[in-house]
Image (tube, rainbow, N blue to C red; front, side):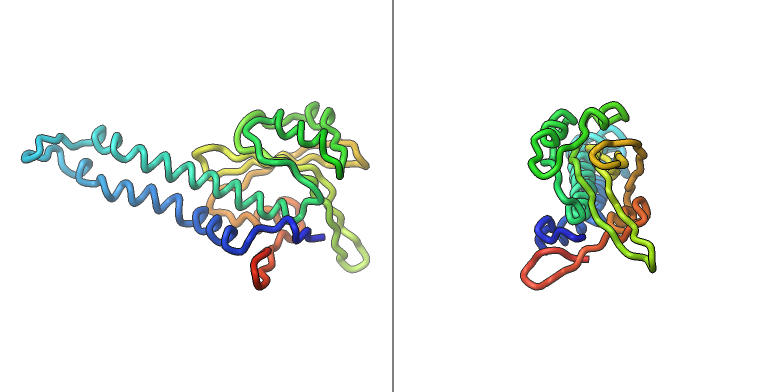
Length: 211
């Protein structure tokens, strides 16, 4: 089922998606445009300023880093919005796996098989958050279930999210697979491909979740 209480606010969702698709790249391109003269001209004679690749790069670097950071954070956050919407429970966001595992151990709604997860392999650092995906849908006479623990790993300065997907049998973790979301893939569309399950968002008046 969809856990509407876990959905983002309308405005926050739109801003995140705007930064993911346009904002991060726009900041990088704007920084390159502002400093283009350093690259196009070898020397500014009146000011005594030399141009070239290195002077251009020094002035462009802050724009590049800011743009890449916004791009990577928005990619992670957009993925988080969709995963949270379909998660029975989830951890807080952390920069190391130890914080994620601590949240799992203390989760009052579901006792995660943390030892099983660690044995199969885990991310170490990055933007990290854990989820318990729990849902089902009927396709004719067949009921398709999704019952997995997922750890999402965002890479600082890269618009990429890696998913560690742990197959659950009861309360034990039995297998792992990994998948990636890479810009400009749609977070909802890519998750639907990975899990063979529709990840959608529905807007409703006054905020809440959207598509």
